[in-house]
Image (tube, rainbow, N blue to C red):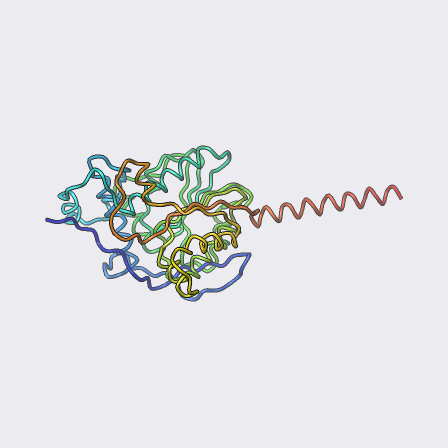
Length: 324
């Protein structure tokens, strides 16, 4: 029997809603998914990711281990995947990106002092909060479709998955009206370092990703890192609409990220494969891996700077008045 993995959704019905302080805007609609409806594209896309992680975990020499991916997959599908024959030398784009994001999250967390805030843009079935070794006191914000996350959380609970001791997992529904406000309300601090990773969150248009960029730019302190996978078709559509040639995609990425205060580096899958000792993945690439660094102050940092500047000015005025 051949390998089985449900196809990822090509189109998503609704974008996430995001309203931020730097650009206030309302987006009607929202992400809606029925966890048990296999015809739902959001559910199918999340199951596809879980299937690929399950398959990678059962390789002779896996890139990573996801002991919980199987809880999302039906027994018959698990059996089909267990019977697959695996090549030791190659991996799919998704699994290479998963390995890249895992390593980047942990290496950045361990080398940046005071970094204890993680924001994950996911499909709702991301198991990173449970399977990665997070430093003590890490708060993980999972931003994903609520219905999928809710059902996935129950399945994880049923198999005994637990968040590392002293860490905290906080869910932020991607269909919320004001995600920035919810992050604040649930404990996010825009004056403290944070790290942001994107893999799996349903995106329908480039506008959705622009809203995410504004959100991250508003909340991430200077020097923070935002990385992950950007759907290639979003960028290709924008490039085509502007009449640009494909080689100009890199320049477009540079300008787009810089306009939001980030310096970006596009990561090649072939390079990721080489670093982990695998052959380059075959087939078309659906996503663009990237790493971006925040060059600006967050909104909270700017507000703190403004208050301090105002305080110094007021103290200077008072001293000047006393001298007169």
